[in-house]
Image (cartoon, rainbow over all chains, first blue to last red; front, side):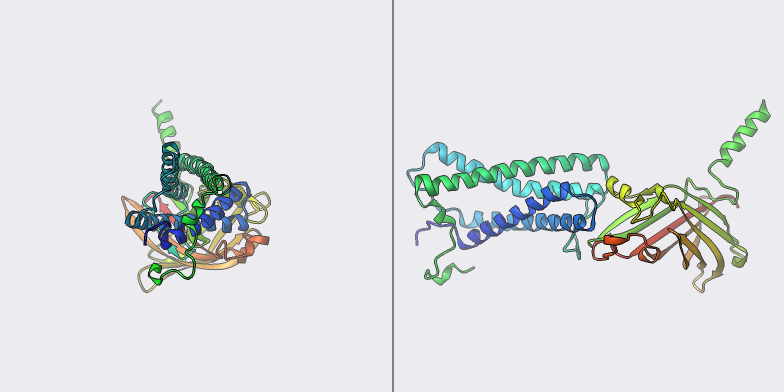
Length: 186
Length: 181
């Protein structure tokens, strides 16, 4: 079978991470506006757990992506568009790695280790350091907003393909139709 | 002239050491608790201690600790501000917490135990804590810890009573440097 779509594992990871990154980003923005309160403590914990999950998922995704590759783009794709697509995809992967990392270390530097789901303490290679905490928090939020801008660009490009070019490119990332061969199951 | 220097020297030496010989500069009063399962460490920067510990006859010891609640240290600056508010320590109305020891005993394992009354935010409760006496670098250290229920003293009231976000148990760790002898 010639691959005109991403491998099912990548499709699932794409949409799972899309939903999770949206929720985590929204929580991050919300938390930064809230006063100290039990709700804020809960939301910031969920935000951190979301970031940890995303970091784990992107590692999986990079592994699967390197193993299975991506379906080729239509031969009609212009060079500049090809380059832009690769650049944005690459930058998105980098953000999936860098934003959680910066946030994780900002949390450690602030003196709050991360305990996944409130039960699993994660490694704390650095201790509290207020100076570093400020810098890392700024880096985290700056990268997060850049990430948000890249996601908008990515979504805008998908919309362009869907409604202006009408080339059905999004089917590459669509969930496999039910009657396909069962060997697609991971 | 020499007398003036001697006087100054005596003053400087005496400064960090109170009447009953606790070196406050070396001593610490720290605590830890969990919020959303995350261990958070803090301390009180200002406290006074009046301690006379008699290891040979523990019953003859005495101790009073006065803690300035507004001197709390926590990892986040907004948490420090929050801690002084009415829901937490209410530092404006209750600037000090006080522990007055009433009984010292020796434990079977070579450690000691102190019992007494802690008054915090207008609430008084009997507490006891085991502690060890350790000698290091010519200083005698009294080191111990005890779990305290913050809710028993109304610390973290209202919406903060929810212990799923901030746990009820606060582990208090004291380390007092006894000056002299």
